[in-house]
Length: 383
Image 1 (cartoon, rainbow, N blue to C red):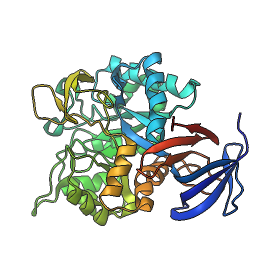
Image 2 (tube, rainbow, N blue to C red; image 1 turned 180 degrees about the vertical axis):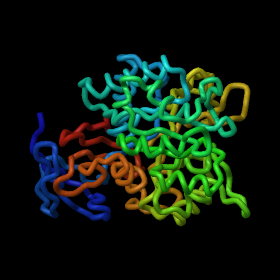
Image 3 (cartoon, rainbow, N blue to C red; image 1 turned 135 degrees about the vertical axis):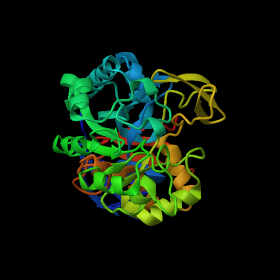
């Protein structure tokens, strides 16, 4: 049941600007007003309010792998996410066969329809990171399941569950990708170019046809060369596409992230985790789809190789990483909240201002999550 409350914060990112000593009034799950009145119901003095995070690329955590979701594991996963400040996610699947893909889509449908014990994150839909990718840039995908991009293959592998899909990753240089990209756009699905050996010209065409997202920029894609900028070079200079960034020590250096932010502009950067089942777990062996992954000292690799396999990043860790690298809290909120909300078509999310849904992450002075407000209800993680 939604209640009316006035929350007192020392700081908050309101409509994209950092302000101080404010009251956020919440009614019926929405922010009704923001003021400097000192009389509040819930005193969170000393804390900072930011819009809750939205992760559009995650494969799980706490031993939970999206390729083998059960009702129990879905609940475990979604219950853990709010403690990272994350209240909405897109559940991602690596390249898999038709049976596994449809089981995954069925689990996403279940997660979207089921009311779980609060606080828990909500699943916005499914992301098919494969199978429509390049063999040359397969990364941590089982090559046996890779398919040429085509409308026919897409319809066959999703079957009657295509309505659950929100994002599809595509290598634009392969198969009938140039037919599939506008088809997906027409269905309200985001085509994301990645796991690709595309040259710049091919990438540019894909973007012109409706590809609006680039999957984990620089990772599993052709690198920039001074006579052939490749897919990464085209993404950097093309204003019509957003770029996903995994801000952890294993995927990108701080310097290359700064290059991306300067090239794309802060409104086109989307921070993701690409987290896998090993996230929040001790060193050991975990699964990513059908592949065995080894976690050692914070780095995930396909077992027996040096191939990076996702990450153990969480959105609150990404928040701290951006701040420590010198980005303002306003920029960081754009990367992790505002921009993901925009690309997912969520006009009520991603900002703290009147009329928006009251989904807020509460940050302490160490930039850790002390609690969340979900649909106006306060959940305290300090004890």
